[in-house]
Length: 281
Image 1 (cartoon, rainbow, N blue to C red):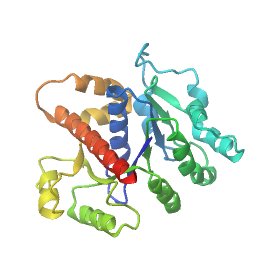
Image 2 (cartoon, rainbow, N blue to C red; image 1 turned 120 degrees about the vertical axis):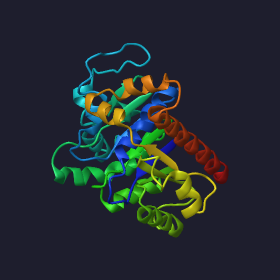
Image 3 (cartoon, one colour; image 1 turned 135 degrees about the vertical axis):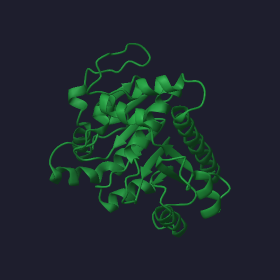
Image 4 (cartoon, helix red, strand yellow; image 1 turned 135 degrees about the horizontal axis):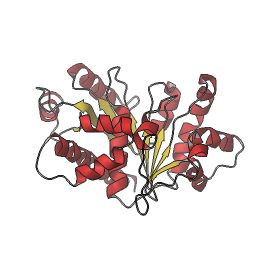
């Protein structure tokens, strides 16, 4: 099904992983679909800390994580690498190497932890893993790490249905990204959604201003607002709990605005994917 890839060429911090994690968690809770999050990071504990490491309360039922194979699957990418090299890979086998966050809904293929030499070898398999996973999961969300070699980044982008191109509110970064999309060397206009990470609504350079005054677009570009509660939850293994709480909030404040922007990005992805599917027919 759909491969949704988070990518940035920006040297500034765009919150790529936080944004991808936020979307994956939201979709995992509100949609009755199988979602796989693939991290391409090296020796990074962001996802582990956000989803499990400090979780004390274990749920049962619909949202209960299956932790039986946690130890084996903490470095599942290494196991998948061996399977691929032995030519025994299949779409359904990927789930044997993931960690489950929401049973039947959200799984994670964590980034590699180990030696840099092996990481450089393993990362050559990412595009194949993404393609195979898309045959089994409804949505595959890929977080492209800055440390990935350029050729491997391009391979993943080429097989992605939707690319979430992350940037900051700096006009220089936004203009460079827009120019890159227009040139079409790496990113394509048809499937790329410009998205501002760590977004500050109070800035003069808000999404509406940037879209209409600088990019000359009618459609407002997407944003992932800065959210203090999310950053705290990522350190405490409470991201799922936070989203369940946010989904129950009423009124308007910075937290409901954050959730509304995640919803808007989800809608933009669905609309773009439907358009692409029509083009392919």
